[in-house]
Length: 220
Ligand SMILES: [Zn+2]
Image (cartoon, rainbow, N blue to C red; front, top):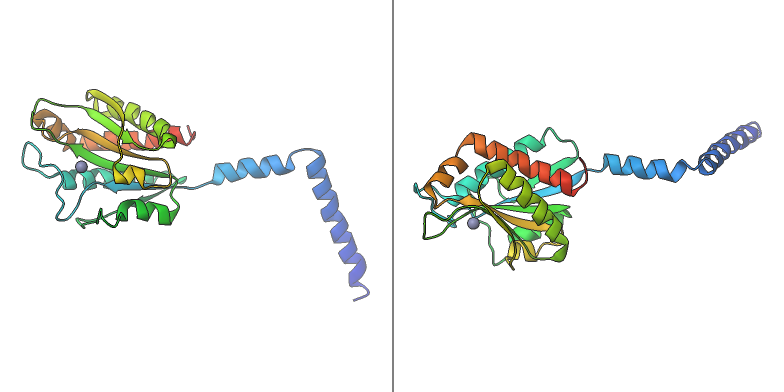
Protein backbone atom coordinates (compact mmCIF):
# COMPACT_ATOMS: atom_id res chain seq x y z
CA UNK A 1 0.00 0.00 0.00
CA UNK A 2 2.77 2.44 0.97
CA UNK A 3 4.50 1.88 -2.36
CA UNK A 4 1.24 2.37 -4.20
CA UNK A 5 0.49 5.85 -2.90
CA UNK A 6 3.24 7.79 -4.76
CA UNK A 7 2.37 5.97 -7.99
CA UNK A 8 -1.31 6.81 -7.56
CA UNK A 9 -0.43 10.44 -6.84
CA UNK A 10 1.74 10.52 -9.92
CA UNK A 11 -1.05 9.08 -12.13
CA UNK A 12 -3.63 11.50 -10.72
CA UNK A 13 -1.29 14.44 -11.28
CA UNK A 14 -0.68 13.35 -14.87
CA UNK A 15 -4.44 13.07 -15.52
CA UNK A 16 -4.99 16.51 -13.99
CA UNK A 17 -2.27 18.08 -16.15
CA UNK A 18 -3.77 16.56 -19.32
CA UNK A 19 -7.25 17.78 -18.35
CA UNK A 20 -5.99 21.28 -17.55
CA UNK A 21 -4.11 21.38 -20.84
CA UNK A 22 -7.23 20.44 -22.77
CA UNK A 23 -9.37 23.01 -20.99
CA UNK A 24 -6.77 25.80 -21.38
CA UNK A 25 -6.16 25.08 -25.05
CA UNK A 26 -9.91 25.22 -25.61
CA UNK A 27 -10.21 21.97 -27.51
CA UNK A 28 -11.69 19.89 -24.71
CA UNK A 29 -15.44 20.42 -24.80
CA UNK A 30 -15.52 21.57 -28.42
CA UNK A 31 -13.93 18.44 -29.82
CA UNK A 32 -16.11 16.20 -27.69
CA UNK A 33 -19.22 17.94 -29.06
CA UNK A 34 -18.20 17.75 -32.70
CA UNK A 35 -17.21 14.09 -32.40
CA UNK A 36 -20.56 13.39 -30.81
CA UNK A 37 -22.39 15.08 -33.72
CA UNK A 38 -20.31 13.27 -36.30
CA UNK A 39 -21.01 9.95 -34.67
CA UNK A 40 -24.71 10.46 -34.08
CA UNK A 41 -26.94 7.81 -35.57
CA UNK A 42 -30.39 9.05 -36.57
CA UNK A 43 -33.48 6.91 -36.24
CA UNK A 44 -35.67 7.32 -39.29
CA UNK A 45 -39.13 5.77 -39.44
CA UNK A 46 -40.45 5.00 -42.92
CA UNK A 47 -44.16 4.28 -42.92
CA UNK A 48 -45.51 2.36 -45.93
CA UNK A 49 -49.12 3.54 -46.16
CA UNK A 50 -52.03 1.09 -45.73
CA UNK A 51 -51.58 -2.71 -45.59
CA UNK A 52 -53.62 -5.87 -45.10
CA UNK A 53 -57.35 -5.29 -45.45
CA UNK A 54 -56.65 -1.59 -45.97
CA UNK A 55 -55.73 -1.55 -49.68
CA UNK A 56 -55.44 2.21 -50.09
CA UNK A 57 -55.95 3.45 -53.63
CA UNK A 58 -56.60 1.15 -56.55
CA UNK A 59 -54.40 2.20 -59.44
CA UNK A 60 -55.39 2.61 -63.09
CA UNK A 61 -54.13 -0.91 -63.79
CA UNK A 62 -55.87 -2.41 -60.76
CA UNK A 63 -52.67 -2.62 -58.69
CA UNK A 64 -52.99 -1.58 -55.06
CA UNK A 65 -51.43 1.36 -53.23
CA UNK A 66 -50.45 -0.80 -50.23
CA UNK A 67 -48.08 -2.83 -52.45
CA UNK A 68 -46.49 0.24 -54.03
CA UNK A 69 -45.83 1.88 -50.65
CA UNK A 70 -44.16 -1.28 -49.28
CA UNK A 71 -41.98 -1.69 -52.39
CA UNK A 72 -40.74 1.89 -52.10
CA UNK A 73 -40.21 1.71 -48.33
CA UNK A 74 -38.17 -1.47 -48.79
CA UNK A 75 -35.93 0.32 -51.27
CA UNK A 76 -35.34 3.19 -48.83
CA UNK A 77 -34.41 0.60 -46.19
CA UNK A 78 -32.07 -1.17 -48.62
CA UNK A 79 -30.26 2.00 -49.76
CA UNK A 80 -29.97 3.29 -46.18
CA UNK A 81 -27.83 0.25 -45.29
CA UNK A 82 -24.94 2.02 -47.05
CA UNK A 83 -25.44 5.02 -44.76
CA UNK A 84 -24.00 4.35 -41.27
CA UNK A 85 -25.58 7.52 -39.83
CA UNK A 86 -29.12 6.24 -40.43
CA UNK A 87 -31.06 3.51 -38.76
CA UNK A 88 -34.20 2.95 -40.80
CA UNK A 89 -37.26 1.38 -39.20
CA UNK A 90 -40.36 0.37 -41.16
CA UNK A 91 -43.78 0.48 -39.49
CA UNK A 92 -44.59 -2.67 -41.45
CA UNK A 93 -42.36 -5.06 -43.41
CA UNK A 94 -45.10 -7.21 -44.89
CA UNK A 95 -48.76 -6.96 -45.87
CA UNK A 96 -49.84 -6.53 -42.26
CA UNK A 97 -52.72 -4.34 -41.14
CA UNK A 98 -51.98 -1.51 -38.70
CA UNK A 99 -54.83 0.03 -36.75
CA UNK A 100 -55.40 3.73 -37.25
CA UNK A 101 -57.79 3.73 -34.29
CA UNK A 102 -54.94 2.57 -32.02
CA UNK A 103 -52.57 5.04 -33.69
CA UNK A 104 -50.06 2.22 -34.21
CA UNK A 105 -47.93 4.07 -36.77
CA UNK A 106 -47.18 7.27 -34.80
CA UNK A 107 -46.99 5.21 -31.57
CA UNK A 108 -44.26 3.06 -33.12
CA UNK A 109 -42.16 6.16 -33.91
CA UNK A 110 -42.86 7.81 -30.54
CA UNK A 111 -41.86 4.67 -28.60
CA UNK A 112 -38.68 4.41 -30.64
CA UNK A 113 -37.75 8.04 -30.03
CA UNK A 114 -37.33 8.50 -33.79
CA UNK A 115 -35.71 11.64 -35.22
CA UNK A 116 -37.87 11.78 -38.37
CA UNK A 117 -41.06 10.12 -39.61
CA UNK A 118 -41.87 9.76 -43.31
CA UNK A 119 -45.11 8.22 -44.49
CA UNK A 120 -45.24 7.01 -48.10
CA UNK A 121 -48.44 7.03 -50.16
CA UNK A 122 -49.77 7.01 -53.71
CA UNK A 123 -52.65 9.32 -54.55
CA UNK A 124 -56.05 8.69 -56.08
CA UNK A 125 -58.68 10.79 -57.86
CA UNK A 126 -61.75 10.13 -59.98
CA UNK A 127 -60.34 12.14 -62.89
CA UNK A 128 -57.43 10.07 -64.32
CA UNK A 129 -55.78 13.15 -65.84
CA UNK A 130 -54.94 14.56 -62.40
CA UNK A 131 -51.25 14.09 -61.59
CA UNK A 132 -48.38 15.23 -59.41
CA UNK A 133 -46.59 14.99 -56.09
CA UNK A 134 -47.61 16.64 -52.82
CA UNK A 135 -46.29 16.56 -49.26
CA UNK A 136 -48.37 16.96 -46.11
CA UNK A 137 -47.32 18.11 -42.66
CA UNK A 138 -49.17 19.29 -39.58
CA UNK A 139 -46.89 20.74 -36.89
CA UNK A 140 -44.85 23.84 -37.67
CA UNK A 141 -41.58 22.05 -36.84
CA UNK A 142 -42.32 19.70 -39.76
CA UNK A 143 -42.67 22.44 -42.38
CA UNK A 144 -39.02 22.56 -43.43
CA UNK A 145 -38.92 18.74 -43.63
CA UNK A 146 -42.00 18.89 -45.88
CA UNK A 147 -40.53 21.59 -48.15
CA UNK A 148 -37.20 19.79 -48.49
CA UNK A 149 -38.80 16.38 -49.17
CA UNK A 150 -41.20 17.87 -51.73
CA UNK A 151 -38.30 19.54 -53.55
CA UNK A 152 -36.30 16.28 -53.73
CA UNK A 153 -39.32 14.20 -54.76
CA UNK A 154 -40.28 16.30 -57.78
CA UNK A 155 -36.63 16.46 -58.83
CA UNK A 156 -36.47 12.67 -58.72
CA UNK A 157 -39.72 11.71 -60.40
CA UNK A 158 -40.25 14.74 -62.65
CA UNK A 159 -43.95 14.84 -61.76
CA UNK A 160 -46.03 18.00 -61.41
CA UNK A 161 -45.19 19.92 -58.22
CA UNK A 162 -48.47 20.19 -56.28
CA UNK A 163 -46.71 21.73 -53.31
CA UNK A 164 -46.68 21.37 -49.55
CA UNK A 165 -49.96 21.29 -47.63
CA UNK A 166 -51.01 21.38 -43.99
CA UNK A 167 -53.48 18.65 -43.03
CA UNK A 168 -54.37 16.93 -39.75
CA UNK A 169 -53.70 13.35 -40.87
CA UNK A 170 -53.08 11.36 -37.68
CA UNK A 171 -49.68 10.05 -38.80
CA UNK A 172 -48.30 13.59 -39.03
CA UNK A 173 -50.35 14.98 -36.13
CA UNK A 174 -49.76 12.31 -33.46
CA UNK A 175 -46.01 11.92 -34.02
CA UNK A 176 -43.67 13.67 -31.55
CA UNK A 177 -40.92 14.32 -34.11
CA UNK A 178 -40.87 16.14 -37.48
CA UNK A 179 -43.20 14.11 -39.69
CA UNK A 180 -44.48 14.22 -43.27
CA UNK A 181 -46.79 12.25 -45.50
CA UNK A 182 -45.71 12.18 -49.15
CA UNK A 183 -48.16 11.43 -51.94
CA UNK A 184 -45.58 10.36 -54.50
CA UNK A 185 -47.92 10.62 -57.47
CA UNK A 186 -51.38 9.63 -58.71
CA UNK A 187 -51.84 5.89 -59.10
CA UNK A 188 -55.14 6.66 -60.85
CA UNK A 189 -53.22 8.47 -63.62
CA UNK A 190 -52.21 5.64 -66.03
CA UNK A 191 -48.92 7.23 -67.12
CA UNK A 192 -47.88 8.22 -63.62
CA UNK A 193 -48.82 4.80 -62.21
CA UNK A 194 -46.77 3.09 -64.91
CA UNK A 195 -43.69 5.09 -63.93
CA UNK A 196 -44.27 4.71 -60.18
CA UNK A 197 -44.35 0.93 -60.54
CA UNK A 198 -40.98 0.70 -62.31
CA UNK A 199 -37.89 -0.31 -60.35
CA UNK A 200 -35.97 2.60 -61.85
CA UNK A 201 -38.35 5.33 -60.70
CA UNK A 202 -38.78 3.67 -57.30
CA UNK A 203 -35.00 3.61 -56.75
CA UNK A 204 -34.80 7.26 -57.82
CA UNK A 205 -37.53 8.20 -55.35
CA UNK A 206 -35.94 6.11 -52.59
CA UNK A 207 -32.61 7.84 -53.18
CA UNK A 208 -34.24 11.25 -53.11
CA UNK A 209 -35.91 10.45 -49.78
CA UNK A 210 -32.44 9.77 -48.36
CA UNK A 211 -31.07 12.94 -50.00
CA UNK A 212 -33.90 14.93 -48.41
CA UNK A 213 -33.20 13.40 -45.00
CA UNK A 214 -29.51 14.32 -45.31
CA UNK A 215 -30.41 17.90 -46.18
CA UNK A 216 -32.85 18.18 -43.27
CA UNK A 217 -30.26 16.81 -40.83
CA UNK A 218 -27.55 19.00 -42.42
CA UNK A 219 -25.39 15.98 -43.24
CA UNK A 220 -24.54 17.07 -46.78
ZN1 LIG B 1 -52.63 6.34 -49.09
